[in-house]
Amino acid sequence: MNITIHTDGGARGNPGPAAIGIVIDADGKKTAEFGKKIGEATNNVAEYTAVLEALRYLKNSDKKNNEIQFFIDSTLVVNQLNGKFKVKEPTLRELLTKIRILEVEVGGKIFYHHIPREQNTRADHLVNQTLDALMLQ
Image (tube, rainbow, N blue to C red; front, side):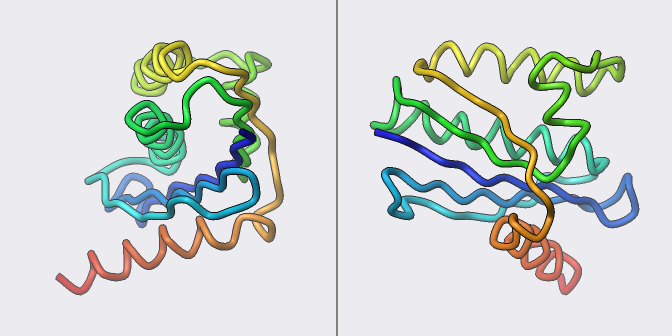
């Protein structure tokens, strides 16, 4: 089974109220999509949290041990996840450690790709929809 995951994270205020958006497809069929508030965070923490939550979702599903392609619109986060850039910020290092543990638990081959924001519109919409709802509370 081939799994593609589009993730996005954002904060209003950076740091500020933050949310994530995740869209998961398995063999070309949408299997899950959701937005989730994550409290106060920076944009980068939100981006990492989106990857973490997507991996948690997979761990608790029947979609383990597959080829998993992540598509993320943050160049920094993709380069850090691929080991091209060092992760210096302590909160991001902690999230990266959790991601690495989940990668092993989920199994399979996991790839992280950068895409332009225009190709990540559904995940971005889920982030903004969640943040808009949060602002109305």
